[in-house]
Length: 227
Image (cartoon, rainbow, N blue to C red):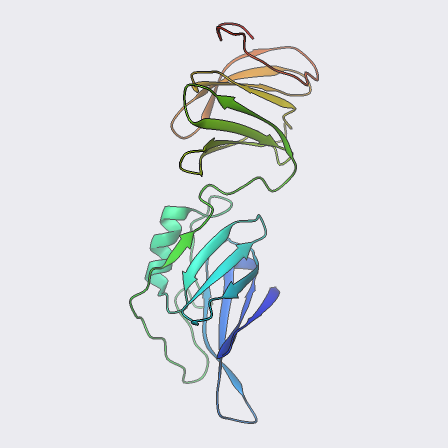
């Protein structure tokens, strides 16, 4: 499905679902003024918009979940694969392909595999794709925790301005959150319970839980030994 037509002075591009990026360049043929010169896919990324730099060398792509990607117009499929492995897909799928499982063209168009910078994620870790519900700070570390209506928690480093961890609660929508002052524990309330998580390198690990329904305000004590 095509979501957006992105024009520039020399060409226009189509972006859409399954990471579709199709390039049409201007020709001197009055009957066929534009010809498709390349078509690639960025995997599972659902692209909904973007813009091309005035130099016609790079473009910024926007996904349905609000992530931004910077891509060189002469990027090769190998560079996309490398970037995808580093950035990851929106649903954890790093697959990258085109219509023939490699770069494809129409007609006699050629693909030039020039040196490029690949695809760069301008929003590492992404953002909440629904309403932000609550947030809290860890006073001993430059970290902030946020929870959203998309049933996820995100751990942010406000010095580097990056999302360092994303945790999916599945079908359980969080209500409130509290961050331990040390930055190593997080308390989250749900409709039927409260859960204490340990903050690991790449996930939140459940530690304890208590039955308490619809708790809308969580807080650790001044000494952080109680909540």
